[in-house]
Image (cartoon, rainbow, N blue to C red):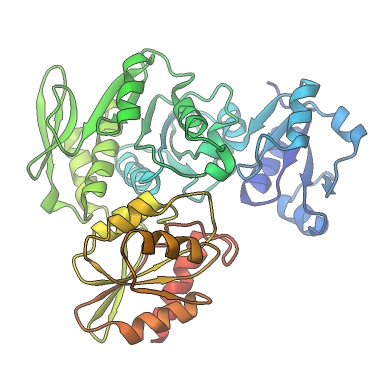
Amino acid sequence: MDLKGKKVLVFGTGKSGIGAAQLLVKAGALPVIFDGKADIDKEEIIHKVGADTPVQVYAGELPGEVQKSLDLAVLSPGVPTDLPLVKSFYAQGLPVWGEVELAYQTGKGQVLAITGTNGKTTTTALLGKIMADARPSVFVVGNIGTPYTLKAPMMKEDSITVAEISSFQLETIQDFAPHVSAILNITEDHLNRHHTMEEYIRVKELITKNQGPKDVCVLNYEDPVLRKFGENIVPEVVYFSSVRKLSKGIYLDGDMITLRTDKEEIQVVKTGDLKLLGQHNFENVMAAVAMAWYDGVDIDSIRKSVCEFTAVPHRIEYVTEKNGVAYYNDSKGTNPDAAIRGIRAMNRPTLLIGGGYDKGSTYDEWIQAFDGKVKYLVLIGQTKEKIKEAANKNGFHQIILCEDLKEAVQVCAQKAEPGDAVLLSPACASWGQFDNYEQRGDIFKELVSYL
C-alpha cells in the first residue's frame, strides 16, 4: 500500500504506537492517534510524535465519522484483535496491520525473525551480535525493546533486520516474510489474550505464513508441536536438539554444538567456551547459529561472536553477593516455563521470589521443578494465593506471602544463609505492580544494592 496521503489510525500510545505514528509521518501519511484511555495527555502525545503537521488525537472514544474516513488501522501489540472496536474495523473492510507489518512494508533489506514462548530475547540479542559482527548494516528490533517502526526509515537494501516477534505482533501480519525464521518452543502463555492453546499455537506458527521454498525455518525438534509443524511447511526446515544427534540440523553432542548439513558436519563450539549457562541457553545458541549460517555467515565469524556474547539483562542475571548470598535477577521469567529454566540453572539452595499478574497460567509444573533446590518460596502480587494453593497441592509448604517486592527482598535477606542464592523468577507478568519486567528487574537490583 502506498501510504502517501492515506489517513491511518494508530491504536495505542505506547512506544510502538508513537514509533508507528512517526513512521507514518515520514511516509507522507496522515496519522490519527487513538487510545482507549480517556485520561491520556493529548499534548504530550503530539509532542512525542514530533510532527510538523497537526496530528489528530482521540481518547476514550473514536468518533464514527473519523472511523469511516480511515484508509488503514495500525494496532499496537497490546491491543487485542477481539475488541469490539477492532472487530468493527474488520466489518467495515478496513485493512488492519500491526506495527511489525507497517515497518516491514516501509523498511528495506532482509529480515531474520524469532518467536517462541521462551528464549526469544537471548536468541535475538545473540543473533544480532553475530550479524552485526559480520554485516555492515544490522538492526535489532521488535519485542526486545526497540520498536521496528523506529528503525525502518534507516534501513537500506543491504540491511539485515533481526526481529524478536511476539504472538501479539504475529496476529496482525499480512505480507511479513522473513528470509530465516525460528520458533524456539511453545508452552502455555498469554492464554488471557489468546484464550486457548490451539489459538496461541496457530498465531505463533504464522511467522512462516509468507515464507517461500528458498527461505528457512529453524524449529525445536524436542517440541512435539513444532516437530509435527515442520513436516508440512513451505520453507526449508532446520531442526535443533539439545538431547539427540540429528541427521540434519544443529545439536548438542556431549559438550560440543555440532551443525550437520547435507554436505558436511561442523563442530561449532564447546559449551564450556560459552559465557551462557544452562541447557536452555545452549538451545538459544543453536537456534542463533543455525539462523546465521543459513543466512550465509562464515562459521569462524559465528564462533567468535558466540564466544564473546554475555547474558542479556533480566535473564538469570547475576546481580551481586551479599553476606555470602548470591542474588540473581530473572525478571524476564514471566511465565512458568521460563521460571522452570531459571530454577534449573541454580546450583545453590535457593530462596525464590515469585508471583505477579495472572495471565491464566497454571503453576504445578513450576513447583514440581523445584527438585529440592528451593528453601523458601516468597510470593507477591495478584497470583500469590493461587501459587500458594498450587504449591501446597504439590507438597511444598515453605511459603511466605509479602505485600511487595521490597518486603520480599528483605525477607529473603533475613532467611538466607551463606552459600544460598536469592532468585527473582516470578513465573508471572509484571503488570499491576510494575510497568514491565525491566522495571521489576531494575527495582530488584536496586533493592539488593541497599542491603
